[in-house]
Image (cartoon, rainbow, N blue to C red; front, side, top):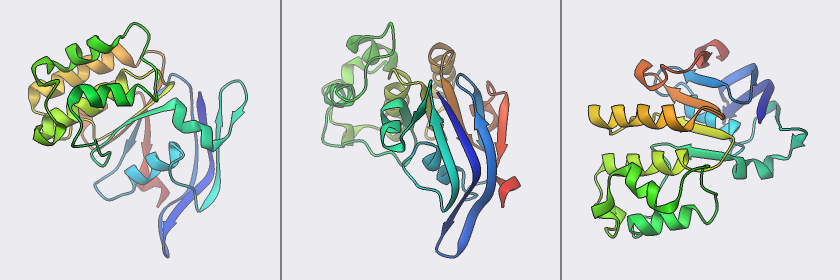
Length: 204
């Protein structure tokens, strides 16, 4: 699946976050959206996923033919600090609920999601008792284990220790080969596998 941006701009009230973004995201490409905190990375990612509209310009989604924006969410998986989990759900309930809406990545089954997380003993614990690192791991594994052509990860190692960062890289190695992957970051170790870069400050 590809995403094409033609003269895209987004503003809040009278302030432009970015303007005149012309860019094409290829299927199976590995992209990093770069910029300092507060520069508009997350805004651009939301626009790419179809959850936020552009103030000007056009976004085109296509596989063999053009895809309407209201159908894009079925093809995108997201992990981000601002993505809320249902705190009252147990880990197992969270996994089951997520995969009512997304299918499993090829080769992955329900029990393997828990195994990948390494949180089998916590499967019946409510997420409100999880640490921030455990919640971030849960978001990452749900996104990576979903069978979607687009994977969007915003600040993917937020709240992870070094062991968690190493675990993140193992997920990337296993689950990104045949997908369009877009990372929002200002930490090089989060996007070291990317070979295409969008510098948000170029569009101010």
